[in-house]
Amino acid sequence: MSKVLVLYYSSYGHIETMAEAVAEGARSTGATVDIKRIPETVPQDVAEAAHFKLDQNAPVAAIAELADYDAIIVGTPTRFGRIASQTAAFLDQAGGLWMRGALVGKVGGAFTSTGTQHGGQEVTLFSVITNLLHFGMVIVGLPYSFAGQMTLDEVVGGSPYGATTIAGTQGQRQPSAIDLDGARHQGELVAQTANKLFG
Image (cartoon, rainbow, N blue to C red; front, side, top):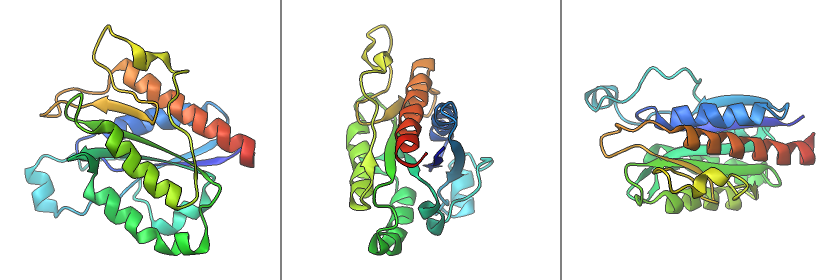
């Protein structure tokens, strides 16, 4: 079976929760799954003052580790319609992997959160996907085989480009059951694809 990395950055815990659901879906295929987080770049005192969630269980990832995985699913919150600066700073360190073609042919995916329904989810997903395509990765999104993203009964995240959630402008909304189901579905599809290619 394949080896999958769920790599995420989360300021307030919403993406952390989504990452756990993505990993759950990937594990359901028999894949070996690790959850690692992107290092925080905000000074400790600033992060504390902003009430960042600093007690996250996942170990901090290192760029060199990315080459050890068959699939990498990247989660990041949206910042003004693009990826968070912490995520960008981390991926910007992958030039050596890019030069060696170390990620070519591996499977990739993206998931995100925004404060509002129309806060740039799809642009953020494409920001991540653009990085992954430059690395030569094969992209798996969240197709409409996950019908939950089409519901009109409640406000939900979800996009054919990746799983999403809506956090609220004050972070007051946690990922819904449908959002988490979408994350699990995407994790499962990414791992299934990697299992076919590398299993």
